[in-house]
Image (cartoon, rainbow, N blue to C red; front, side):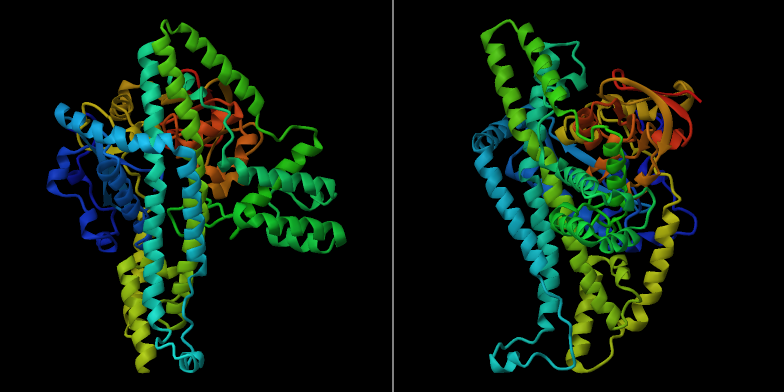
Length: 605
């Protein structure tokens, strides 16, 4: 059946946004849709790329998909799936997963997978500790990269110590080191991650066969309440809030207050203010290196770069403390509930063999689950914050030489173009000449920024092309919530569905009614009011502080192991994820009912 008759356009039917002609020049040739792509199912990766891509930032799609595919296809040999491919249309990232469907090939790959994945599962804790060491070393490597200043005359030590290398050489070397470090980080990222999803998917499928009536979220709740590193940044905000109350400086925080004014006021409060500011400085690295996005866009600055988000959360937590309210997650209750569910379902199994398999698979899930969340802080947040800020130093170098108007314009160059511009500056410094780029790049970048802003007006379809018969990729199911059922629901004609209902994954149990607040970015979480229902494209760890304030959450995209689903379960609130278009159909101020038991969101008015 064609994609069009199912409600999805074909890639060839997508037209340019008026006024953005030529947008393709910002991206590599291999990211454009091809005629044969009309036969393939693609979906919009709004989870990671909710906005049009600036030219440089497209590297944050290109490199991750190289790494993901390498580990699923070539390193671990996942039996039923290869890698993920991507295309760009009107600045948006669409992806597809290549399945393995031939039974003999699945069995061949399975034998390879069992040997290789088994080695990691059997040595998980040891290998994970080694992984942390590699990540910390890589973060330090990027921190230590220097960007040459190119003074009139080079350092005298080039002569007195006979170094034999002028500093302009390090423009090329250190820029390339930044790009290669980013690639290494993403290979580290996927080294463990797909195994984590795979382990959960195997347990999930076992439960679905053994307990035909079990819900997806009940399976997920068997791994809820496990302490993970990813909650640490929000925990540090709670410590700072408690310290502010203890020191009686909490009056300097308030929703909407300017962080600079707050810091200045605390600096004038004597020893109490000084003590809090010292605690803040100790906390900022690394716990404030949290992107307000998910580490894929240069303009999603970290808490450390813009204190508005963390200070808004601290204001909220100090208010709760002063009212005698708990600011802690209900971890103990979740653990008790987890153990009750596990015991109930285990008791339904009728043989020692089944119980042994259940115990083994669940134990593996508990072992690997922390990495599924924790890697995000090391990779998408800590590393990427440092990385983007290091690249800004290269942008500042180009701006000083007049090649670009502002350091931030660097990110509207493709990474290969940035390389060329930097090499021309190196040549100009060496020759004593003037870079031709001064007259070349500025008009191009001005036009690209205009096009990029205009592309934001486009409302991308959730999917393109024909609906596949089956979805077998563990990442698509667990993270994005892409299954045959969800994409069929997305494809339904509007008149075939209740205009007041949205359907998604029942991600966290319970039912809640309240006023909706539609937010597109974590930068806007200060707009949330007490007891509202968060409606968003997707959440990431930087949204953590808002979960203590809301009554329920609804997202456009996500599966049972998406961040929104995991955090909602940890906070014990209803959640429906993977609705496909909640942010388009629900308006701020409307009253909605979120049924986290059935996966239905009802617009009440």
